[in-house]
Image (tube, rainbow, N blue to C red; front, side, top):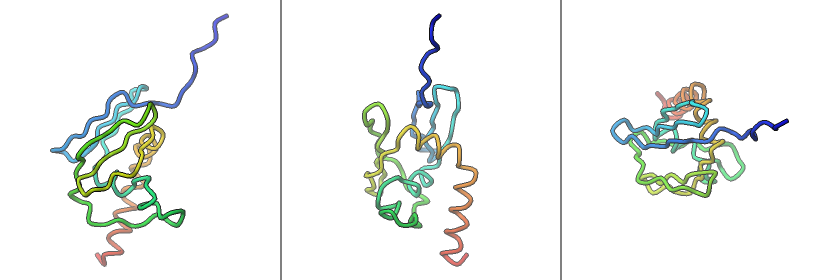
Length: 121
């Protein structure tokens, strides 16, 4: 009897920066697709600068118009997104990209609400 193929976490088969739409398009090998705004990816960067060095996640503002200058592969497990504001220290693993896509509907409005409150809107 042949054993089933190994199960692996979903991996992206297509990653495209859509600059005009200001979004990153992701298609995973299981067919799931996401359109994630550049601003969302920037404010939810996994870098220590944003995650607060182990403290609560910092509120990053002023990134509404941030762009992506480049996307560089990191081995077979992640990408480094180089934003046009100079931020380039977060590694976006396949798992993190999937989680950001799956949780967009809850994370993004919560961030926008927190930002509006902090700015007094």
